[in-house]
Image 1 (cartoon, protein in one colour):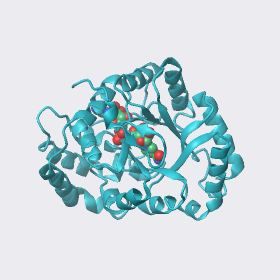
Image 2 (cartoon, helix red, strand yellow):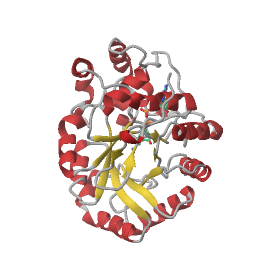
Image 3 (cartoon, rainbow, N blue to C red):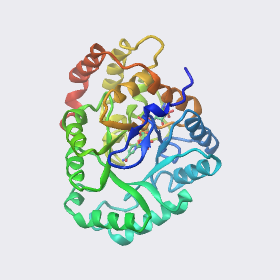
Length: 335
Ligand SMILES: NC(=O)c1ccc[n+]([C@@H]2O[C@H](COP(=O)([O-])OP(=O)(O)OC[C@H]3O[C@@H](n4cnc5c(N)ncnc54)[C@H](OP(=O)(O)O)[C@@H]3O)[C@@H](O)[C@H]2O)c1
């Protein structure tokens, strides 16, 4: 494992905004909840390690541990002078996902709560948190977000989506700066279908679940156990939310087999985790990959991925071949 401090030359501009992000960010879901027990002490140590390694972007959400993740990010920011861009999300507090739920009153209330949790006057980037697909036919919701920008509560806004169709519709709204979407070696369709359009529109892309919930770290086994409150246990089949968020929607054993094939492609000294992250950064359209991290060692390993040399065309072709042979039929038509 090597230590890394992300160089300023690696920064990628987020869409049409004036935000410049490190290619590896920090995904702050696991430090909030739904990933088994994580102590705040470890979480803060992980966050500090990220900043020490040069990371300048954190993705959180109001519902991650009911504000716990946002509050930890606020603690980090209070004790660091570094410029840190924070994205959060709104919408998942609704008991049921309806378009009507994304009202001015609800959005304003959620955003005020996030501002309090984040101890901030303005949210750098607010993302609608996988809203119902029908929302994209309701321009008035984006009008509310425009008003919140004018009021100074939001600097920028974007969306987090499940499906490419939703992403395509979202970016027709001119002030949507970013789309957060699952993109990794096991979820390659966005590059085929969505990235070219996002590039035309100059929309930023945040690649979430970059490690397929840990599958692409190469550390998981058939008999790996997950705690009861870890979604890799309770959402294996989509019992609680979209199954695509857990192991990217890939059947566990098939995923393990594909990872074993990929292991043969690792350049010397590169871990499976770093390989999976470097693969994502091969796509210039991606502004930032946001691996989740619970411990400083994980974060350090993840950050170092952006210092690795590019993967060769042969290796990229081999990853695509593995995807085509083992994974495509499970995910390609679904998301
Ligand atoms: N709907 C949405 O908008 C949405 C949904 C999902 C995620 N996200 C965002 O995307 C971020 C990333 O996705 P994710 O957290 O779901 O999945 P991920 O990044 O694919 O996987 C994260 C998990 O992998 C393990 N891990 C990370 N680095 C590792 C390393 N170096 N070595 C070994 N294990 C490592 C950790 O869990 P263990 O140590 O427990 O194995 C970690 O919690 C989230 O944190 C969140 O910010 C957004």
